Image 1: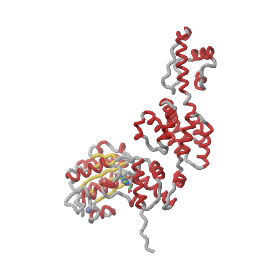
Image 2: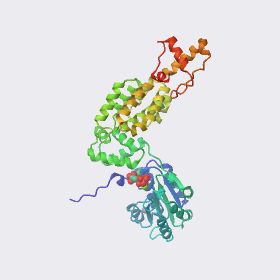
Image 3: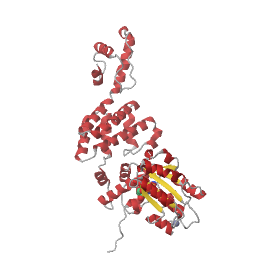
Image 4: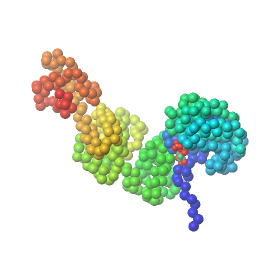
Length: 433
Ligand SMILES: Nc1ncnc2c1ncn2[C@@H]1O[C@H](COP(=O)(O)OP(=O)(O)OP(=O)(O)O)[C@@H](O)[C@H]1O
Ligand SMILES: [Mg+2]
Ligand SMILES: [Zn+2]
């Protein structure tokens, strides 16, 4: 049987034209203009997280510089001429892709400097693509400096890095710098949708969103996860199987826990945690999602016009609206801050389940901290009425995270004696006493 060799999605879908590069218009448009106007820099620096198009764009640029279907550099390489094909297949000897991690020593750069002097063998330009350039040694960077500043007119450098902060300023300042951005969830899901449609894969929108969220902005990651999902599910992908595979938590669990926190229903919370554990879900991931949702609630509470700023939600806006209804901004913010602060403790805990349970229970109690404010307000008001209190420092509390200021103890104690039963005293206050 004569079967075509299988090509993984990420390779098969590598963009071949500037317009196919997703989410980086600010870069591809600039490059196209430069090519159009013949104002091409001699050194570029492509920075940004993994799998968002740095190498792909570098190769397109190499084709654009060398395509023989045009008389000179073109914004629209043909992808059919001998030069374009050789670059696409990685066989063009004039386009050098150097891995900075394994060629990091000064000897490697010296060799490059020797080699760069010679005119290109076949193409118009020699193109040096140095990947992970931040891995070069200090000596290697120094050896590169002069060549980078004034390379021969037939040579172009494209340096790529996921860690631009490790590239010395002497290097970055000699390059035209482009920052590739992480791609948003919706845009990622759309890109995946296009692939699945072309590959005749049946998949629902929610599953695509799940995959997109997991990829945290990286297109290659999104494609690799999709590949894995297809291997697991075949041509018909179901939401259940995707969440099973990715250990994704369904909207129900998130919704229940948020509502349990907001209404202080510990049993519901613990039940959800229990079922997450039984189903083998990743608790850390769940906690992260919870934090994201509280962030979304805050955004929505801030302004109903801020809906476009809501990221990564698997809950409908109607559910979010319902959740913020009877809670103040301050209340939501307290919970958000608390979850954010406790996230590392769950991550590093030997008992992540118990740590998370305790954190959730505590988060639910925070809500009542507002009555702590109310207590203090009451005390201050009372203080004004009674001469005893007039001589004491006024109790001020703006940030509920802080301990009560200097000596409120005797005021509170006195207030308890006088108005016992009328004021709610929280455990936090008791422990402060
Ligand atoms: N902006 C993009 N548009 C379309 N596809 C992309 C894009 N970015 C990445 N991809 C997909 O991911 C694969 C890898 O992309 P590429 O090699 O360009 O990433 P990179 O930014 O160089 O990543 P790394 O930092 O890991 O080297 C491509 O083959 C392509 O399928
Ligand atoms: Mg790369
Ligand atoms: Zn061509």
